[in-house]
Length: 235
Image 1 (tube, rainbow, N blue to C red):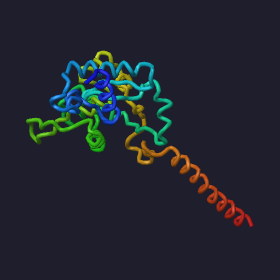
Image 2 (image 1 turned 45 degrees about the vertical axis):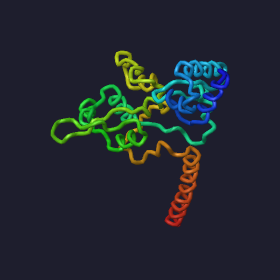
Image 3 (image 1 turned 60 degrees about the vertical axis):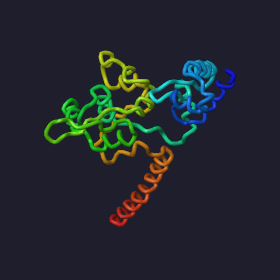
Image 4 (image 1 turned 90 degrees about the vertical axis):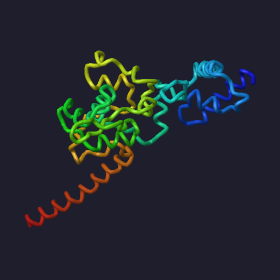
C-alpha cells in the first residue's frame, strides 16, 4: 500500500465515521495481512492533520480517538446553519459538573456539602442523559450513596484527551472562568431554577418570538372589554 493511499483511506474513514476513531479502530479497517503498523498509522494521521492547514476544519485528538471538527473561531457563522439555539446550562449544573470533574469520585451529598445547597435530581439526570457523568460505585457508608465520575464522552465533548488537561484549580477564581477555560459551548445562564415561569432553555427562538406576539394580541381584547365596561358604567 502506498503512503498516499493510506492517508486517503484514513482521511475518508474519519470523514465518514461521525465519531472519534481510535488508532485500534483505524487499524481494523485493513485486512490482517495488509495491516500497517502503528507508526505508519500515526505518520499518516499527521499527514491528514497537515492537510487541514488553512481549511475551515481541523483534525484533533480527544479521549476516544481522532476526529474532524470545525475550527472554533468559525462557530459564529457555522452556528447559523441550525435554527435552534444551542442548549444553555444553569450555573448550578455547571458547578455540579465541575465538582464531579475535579473531585471524582464524589457523592451527591458531598456535592451538596461543598455547594451549600441541595442538588436537583434533574441536574444529575441531565448529566447522565448526556453521558457526561456515570455511577462508578457506592460509598461504604450508611445508605451506600452513589459515587459519580465523568465519562469519555465528557472528555470528547470538551475536546480533552484526559482529565490532566483540565485547567488547574489554582488558575480558576470563579466558575464563569472555568466554563470559559473548558470551552463550554453552553453559555453560563444566571436564571433561577426555581422560577417555574422561565421559558425552556432549549425553546425555539422563532417559536418564542411568535408566542410573545400572540400574547400581545390576546391582551388587546381584554383592554377593549374593560373600556367597554367602563363606558357602560358611565352611561
